Every structure is written in structure tokens, then in C-alpha cells.
Image: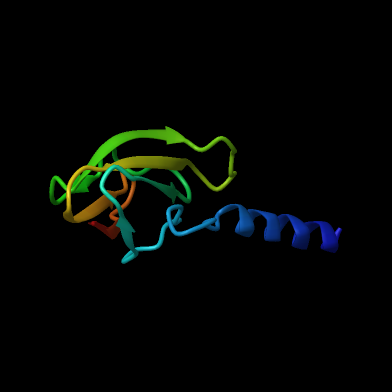
Length: 113
């Protein structure tokens, strides 16, 4: 039984981990570089009730918010959202994600070249 609990806990922790530079999870202060026309997907995981508001605040027209959807898997801790963006023009954009249930902010920077 102890092995099962440890295995299940490890599975939950790993399920929340990002898979690459365009797939971060709940880490503020990340910086991304895209080419004009490129796409970016950012995954946000909530713990407990609530979710991240859509659309997130974007500081410039360098990127455009495309859509938000639920991840294709379920994590018991809370909602997992996939935010998708398109690189439109050269420049820098600051993206601010705000949570609906508590005061959490996640802030990322996107440079488009």
C-alpha cells in the first residue's frame, strides 16, 4: 500500500510538469522567443477551486491570444488549461494570468523576432 501511495503521488507530481519550452506549468517569470507566425501554448494548472481567467492580459500586439481549452487529461488537484497564442509582429509582450479564486498572478514574457 505504501508503494502504491508513493507511486500515485509521483504520478500526480509528474502530471503537472511541463514538457518543453512552450509548455510551462505555473512558473512565473518565464521568457519565450518565437518567430513571427509561430505559435505558443502555455499550460496552467490550478490547485483547488477556480481557474485562470481568459483571456489573459497582454501588454502589446506582438502576440495574439487565440483560445483557451481544457487539457486532454484530468488532474484531481484542479483545472488544467491550455492557453494558445500566435506571434503576430516583432516585439515583446508581457502576458499576465490571473486566477479567479485567489490572488495568484503568473507573468511571462514573449519576444517575437
